[in-house]
Length: 359
Ligand SMILES: NC(=O)c1ccc[n+]([C@@H]2O[C@H](COP(=O)([O-])OP(=O)(O)OC[C@H]3O[C@@H](n4cnc5c(N)ncnc54)[C@H](O)[C@@H]3O)[C@@H](O)[C@H]2O)c1
Image 1 (tube, rainbow, N blue to C red):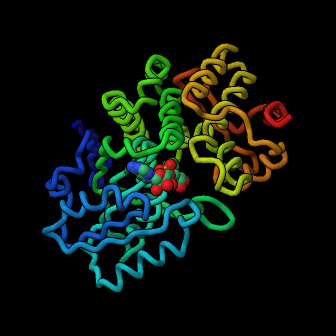
Image 2 (image 1 turned 120 degrees about the vertical axis):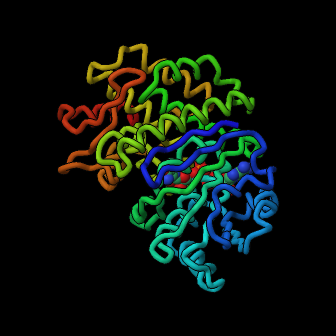
Image 3 (image 1 turned 90 degrees about the horizontal axis):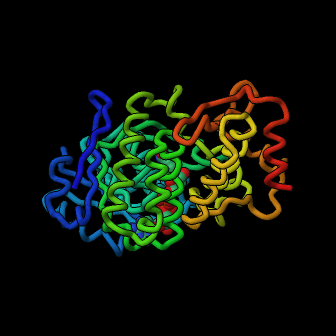
């Protein structure tokens, strides 16, 4: 077991990573202040892990809510159903909401916690690799609106994140790979040595080897914690975590958020960003190839969805939150291990990249 901290003054919190943490009946004791604990999970995760979490809360007033599974339920209706549960059970401001599941559960429960009685405590128990390396850390919470993904949300930091690597064993390969996409992202934007480690060890991750998983979760969280500590509300540096996301969100939106997983769309987006970075003269020609090779070895896509056109990309990219003064802001790579946020790229360059990928 290892612990690292997100340093945010009074709102600092630990991230605990280890194998079998949820089996320890005392694992939540240090983090629960009040009597009421409200565990929110979904119908896929509940049969796997809810009993373990409930066992650790037997001395509390425990309320459980099991939501339907899927990104399509990350919406106002689900949020309302959580508020209904809290109010019907007369939960006070000292209640703690506990999100048990992947990024969808973490985002919607976190947002409910941010709003309920103007903010109550919440704990993240992420059970997907994507959530353990990314979404559970940093305090971004949201639901989707029919006009855009994650458009309604709040910054609300958890009181702790407990990542049990044992829970990853029940993920399928595709869900594992979508999390690996975000892991590769940290290497690309901040750490060439970590990227090289991934090139050496990617197959160990794909085989669910515990020590390899624990290492990448800790490294990823270390990077994310540093970025969040420097720029909690995304005024600058935190935007670099969006490498591949502006292209990726366009893919997710164009495909109706159903066929493509988030990390898969981000993988293609990172390739597109790498191509553009090479055109800017920053990446050497062999660097996009190294990135492509690693993504392919991680079973991630590197081509855009069939039939998706350049205008489709532009339409959805313009709706993304990352637009500045009418120009689409992009995170590009200065080299493997260093990212930069740009909106002053030469006219026509984005069109060239889109044409290359969609043509
Ligand atoms: N808040 C942030 O900073 C942030 C960052 C990245 C992504 N996100 C959000 O995260 C969401 C994607 O998260 P995700 O990839 O975890 O998807 P997800 O929450 O939909 O989980 C993927 C699938 O795995 C299942 N599952 C979860 N844990 C499991 C386990 N241990 N064993 C078996 N099945 C399990 C889920 O029920 C679901 O079917 C998106 O909504 C995205 O917008 C948020």
